Image 1: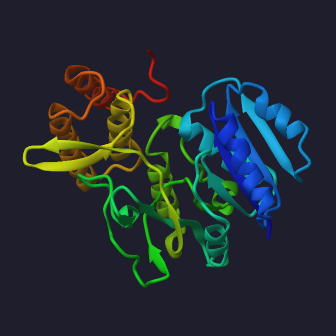
Image 2: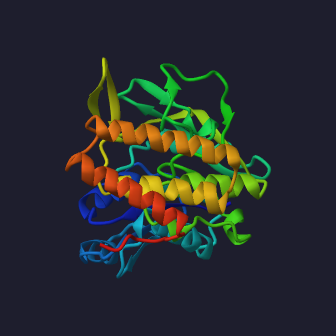
Length: 301
């Protein structure tokens, strides 16, 4: 059974090289490493061409694939490499060798679609179990200690650190590049579930997550909110509405996303922004309208 690692890159040459060299130095048990880049500078191409690392492959695209397009390309190319499983990593992944080894232990589960590490958020001091439930008003939830169950059934989790079975790819179940940026791993999890594939969080495959948060005061309490740039308000809103209206329509999903959108509008009004409240709200509203109009891909500037 062949296992590979596929790393995403966009203007992250240094981090990708550091990650590749870490994997090689620690002798991770893999049959190859694939790097998929967007609008590469040439540095990674030169590095891979002159590297002595076995089965190191670099592919660059002259357009910005976005996180959704990059994930789709990585999994399709992994299938072309005739790998059976692939560990998907972002350039800034904090997944350790031991985490990877723990995931590998469960790859023989019948009809498995994906195995996910249990992410620990140091800034929030909890282990993330968000993927065990449908998307709701809040992005993440968890607990301060891991559950004792080794395998926790889930609907989705972050693709950063996920061990994906390539069988669904060969059967036509692939990540959707329409979203361009954001929630592509959630949509792919829903697709895997609909197609009958199983997904699990692996409680003993723990890794830190360096997702950035910013602390904002709301009324009489402080909240840790995503520190994504303001333009992300557009994709955060549009893509969730595309999912609940078009790709996996559901009345309950619409109600959940509506509550979430209203809640995020309130947060923006109380200062969840980097530029201005009006511009952030405009981006969010445009995302909603574009979802109704089924506008996909990268937003035109």
